[in-house]
Length: 316
Length: 106
Image (cartoon, rainbow over all chains, first blue to last red; front, side):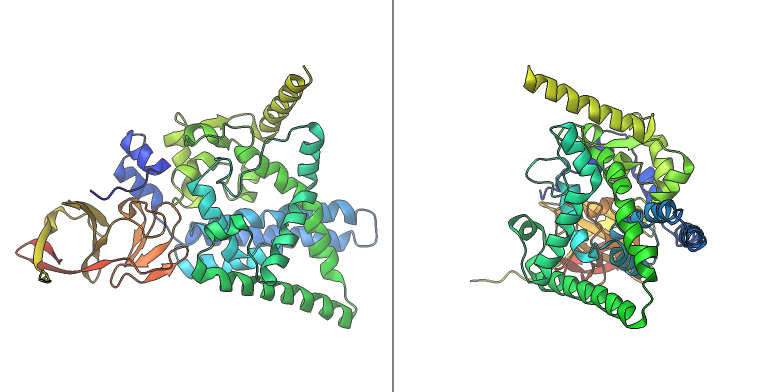
């Protein structure tokens, strides 16, 4: 008998955590929820953009740019959902929106899709999960991670490497041979687009995009690092989905910003479930997954406790 | 070497198919996915040729089956990959309905 690989979903079905009928119900897609969420998203961006305009001639432009940045970096959450085709029922809409998100946050969509596939196959397995964030060894490393400096160094190195036609050893494992050329051209097109934007600004003398987009993006990224750290960091580096991933209960505005990605364990269990159905899936799976009821701050307290405890052990 | 001729084989009764969805059928050593679509019944191997997951647990919409693990997708009419990370066609079978049974040619 041909054997399917064991996935969190097959385990959940085999263990009766979820029935096939329930699964079918959760997976149903439509364009309505995604389009409504996107409309509110654009409205939110319009508001934060207005804040920057209103604060243009004062020091208040810095907090305004930070607020804009917090929204901008959450395009990662939308792009992530688009990678899974779980925002819109119409498949090309996911591709288009995901591509645009990638341009906004400097994350080529195609490459991210392939990398993210291996993250789902090897979640939290050291040496196999390409997105694994190790538990920082010290408070200094924790702060450095949250600064987003290592993140940006990684992103720029990666995009330039791809534009030059190279993949590193890890990337060669998950980008199929027939897609390598496309990954390289994506990086070149992306860099060409950014170059054209800067040339356009230089020629017109209007540098607005630096203040509305570029600076806010860098100001906001530590918030995304703060969010992303809570998904798996500090959870056991084992294959059991019930243990290796954190679901965070968060207030509605935060769930809105991260497109319900705070229901992270549910998402890993059944990645085909659209973002709007994740709260319902949570009700079904909440007794079988690790849930942090205290929100993002409690998750970070847990991470910091583990860092301090490890540091004390080393010093002892 | 003698080439074995392909013959039509019963897979499942049409009445047992999940309506507008994908149904998993075991046929000897093979897992077969049978699709009930607006334009008729189609069948393919059930395991995704990208990551090896069972596509019968995936999302099915119209003529497109999506792998539950990575959301790579295929058109069930001809096996054509329609969304990455699927890049190679999946193996589909010639399919027909006869006397209330779904049959595939293999």
